[in-house]
Length: 274
Length: 180
Image (cartoon, rainbow over all chains, first blue to last red; front, side, top):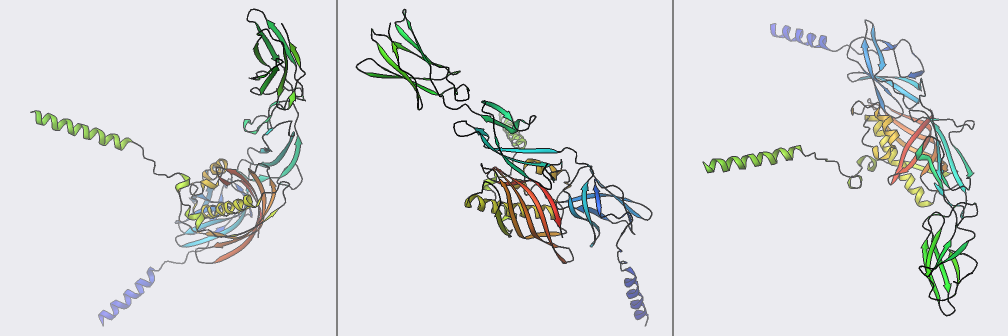
């Protein structure tokens, strides 16, 4: 009988040890739009075994808990922004989880960046000066913002660049947005020749070579000097530097007829005589 | 005496080589092309694409985009559940990676899991060099699985900017337009 009594007491004691159910915390300053960084989210709750995080669209953001007499206050650990949009505040106590739906909105956009992507990055007047331009705007936290176009996150247009050869930037202070306008092919070739008596050579100069927009043709362009002595045709080549290429042709008491060729462009013929 | 000197020298040499070996930093991380992305491999979703851009991508580019976009979502879901910022870094641009690292507090045990079941990717802009893609992903069907096995399905619309960097597409910016 004593044993039975003991067992009954034991069973009642075990029942008494059962944890009371965890009650859902009450969000006292409840809001549907939560400004980030989150600060002073006041909850009324019992116990001190709570964990909390904001579950944004991209990732969970841990929250700090400061316990008060009636519950706890949540605040964000850092002052950083977040991916804006629908989210949940998840409050856990052991295996009990409670969810509060919110819409996240960063208090500040911090730095707003206009992205201006150009394609192709290098243009050549021979093929065209058109460039595709894709634009969008983002805040410091990689959230897309509307462009200047109403209710549009993206904007695209075709732009025609100035034909002046050089480097320019789509966004002035961002070197990575640099684009390049190359010089095109030369449209005409000026050839000059002088006779050097000491060396007994013709000093032939082609240039300055310009494209149709008056840009100096690119360094390294191959220039061919083709000359005929009445019997044979000879060819000498030189590369362009600062728009000019020159060669020295031995005189050997001959008279030459010479022209210069750069790609498909051919100069007038000149006569080389002493 | 000579024997003791000889043994001491050997011990010193061995000690030196042992310490040198320990000081050498060993980077155990394999290069990307030798790694298997288990998270991306295990992921399955249905992506339908519609091209609205002036310069349309060719079929091969479109297939690459769909594959990479699926992988991006595999890692976005993993990030959502675990805050494991590093696992998907091959699918994030540097700026996006920096942004998610601001809220990194260690990898956590997944509590709420998310799966993306359906995408309708409307390509708005496609750069002629194939390096930039902007899109509106409308009707993204998201399945959220709670710890008590409760399942919730929502539809979301998202604007995304993808950049082609280092052999695949990476997410650079996003706007969650709505989720119902």
